[in-house]
Image (cartoon, rainbow, N blue to C red; front, top):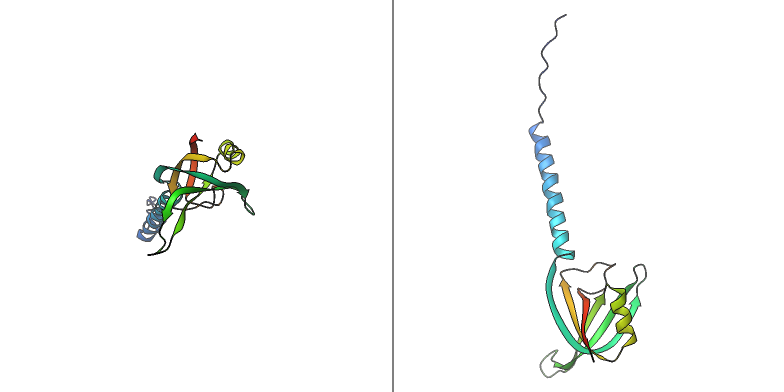
Amino acid sequence: MEDLPQQKKTKSGFKKFLFLLILFLLVGFGSYAYWKYYYVFGEGVKSGYLNYAVKKGNIFKTYEGKLIQEGFGSVKTGGIASNQFEFSIEDDSIFRQLELNSGKYFDLQYKEYHGVLPWRGNTVYVVDKIINMK
């Protein structure tokens, strides 16, 4: 018997399309997840009196805190509300220092993200450094 030459099999057009579609969706999802949860949207410093620093959570125990800033903010015309800054803390040593000095005046450096991760904290603001304490 005579052997016929083997024809090289090529991917069909649909398989190429499906592969490219899945690749595009994975890259798109990965980019969105990075932008939403890991991209630092803003950085800054907030100053005020530390109201509380707590460790809480059902599954993920996170460090949370609240800073009371001086001055007043207006919720609506004629209304007066206190300026409060609620934040999360990733570093255990920063939390310990805040916990031991509740009620004191702090300057806190923070990073702002677009979204919240349950193991990072309950807010989009994450304090990463204590600049000053009075």
